[in-house]
Amino acid sequence: MSATRVTGSALDVAALVEWACVLEATAPKPGNVSPGRPFEDLRYEDFVASAHAIRPVFENAGARPIGQTVRLAVEATLGHAPSNTNLGIVLLLAPLARAAEKWGRGSLPDLQSATREVLAETTVDDARQVYAAIRLASPGGLGRVDSQDVASDPTMTLLEVMRLAAHYDSVASEYATAFNLTFSAGAPALSRARRDGLNWDDAIVETFLTLLARAADTHIVRRAGIAAGDDVSQRARDVLDKGGVRSLKGRRAMDDMDRSLRDARHTLNPGTTADLTTAAIFVELVCERSA
Picture 1 (cartoon, rainbow, N blue to C red):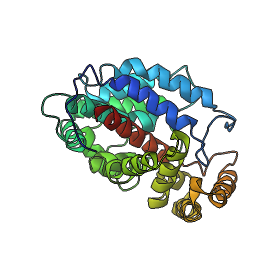
Picture 2: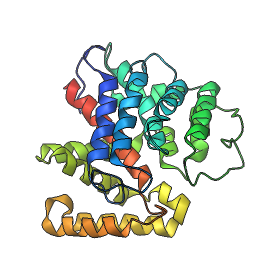
Picture 3: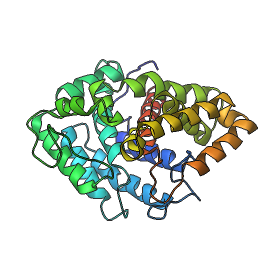
Picture 4: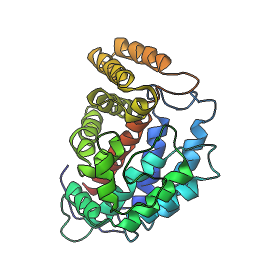
């Protein structure tokens, strides 16, 4: 992913945020909502409406603190979906969008380096704003922790509290590592799939499976335990070993996997991996339009 000079006006970050969210929701990822594969409390249309709702917020993401962008995006989503559709996505895209704005000016430093700089600038108020957004979104399976729990006011910067949570939450881990998984695995997998001629749906599903095969989904782990998370990751590896979206055998295995992950309580929904996939899509879109 080579960097070339792009002006801020040429790189419409808000449009790319919306497009990344829609592309991710549209791809038929095992265990997740997609067209014709709803949950009883969430449908594909809810995710599309949420993507449209947050676009105006991200129009100023480059000039606004990360925490405020997260809170405003979650507030914008309320009323467009019956339950949490995009908290993890917004948490991931807020720093990436701000970094993309920085990367799109001047000497264009590496996008991950720009992301690292953005994260290093976070404040205690960013953490307060994010905590407020989390309480608004009310995600399932959150639990409580001894230090810097979201039910109380934080006393550390957003990056610092994310580092505390990095060992049990993949979104927090991305903050702690300057989005290492996104830049080292997710975006490269998506870019490779696109270069190989895969359409967006297949490329995104392959990226999702690649990320899930690499690490247990922390949404599953929180709700069903580490053994369940490891089992789902093994299923993803098995699907990829059979060819994934690139073979009939792989597609059949993927359909079997999708059926096995659907239950009434969505305990095996790899939702965090879907969020990470959205981050990879956004990075790929930024790089495509910057080439």
